[in-house]
Image (tube, rainbow, N blue to C red; front, side, top):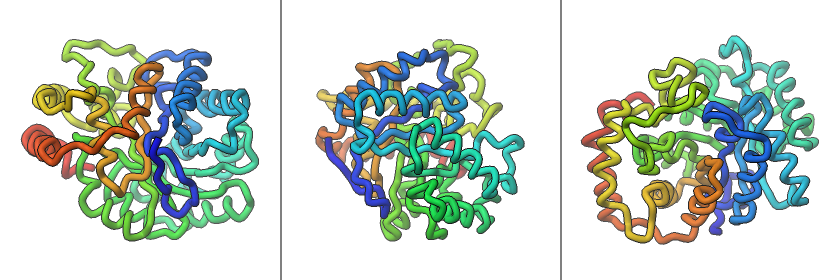
Length: 329
């Protein structure tokens, strides 16, 4: 697989990683063995960057990762990034302080079986938290104490990303970017490159819309966010189907079908489209289907999309997506 530098962290990671939200929850039931097998499959495919969070199954995802890394004896060969903050209740800016973050970091260190977290990311804090220098001072203190090696943020909005990278503690930004969420490719990517910020792309397939495998009449389990968060009832609406109204999303997918290169699936085209942006360090699709995990990893070595495909994607975005999504995130 191809590799890219993750900002100033010194980590050289595969440009296709593995996201483990699917393993931890909000995507229906997943057993411990299904979670472990997903991670094994990714490692076998060459993936060496795994992203998780303490809130994914309340530590379930972190624990499964640790089990497989120990089983395979590959801890020195795999970079694991985790996130903290979403367990805060209430989830308010002032609670992003040293005491709370240190407590969360200690539990993640225990669950992942490490002395120091390789990359700790604030997990989509409320916007006001980005204007609290004390929050980012807390990250520095955690580094000084040897509990964290590198720090980053996971954001909902471009504005939050731009504010976050003003802090020298922030070396990476995790952000939603896909064919239905194109705004980051404007000013943010330019600034990220200028400051040598690692860019981790999440939700690359728009909650499955961009696989081309979903149908308009599909029903999701009660504990799947594509059932309970359509209007943002549980967390930011932009996390589910990229914030796009579902019918508009299916209309856009129908238009995209004719532009999928013969040697690719739609999901692979969607991932390749992301990797064609050189500001991106790694993309972290999540799936518990072994064949999907292997197909995702294979995108790393696929050729870039043609200018014609990129132009078609932009045209479809402007016609079906822009008005609903672009100004919001």
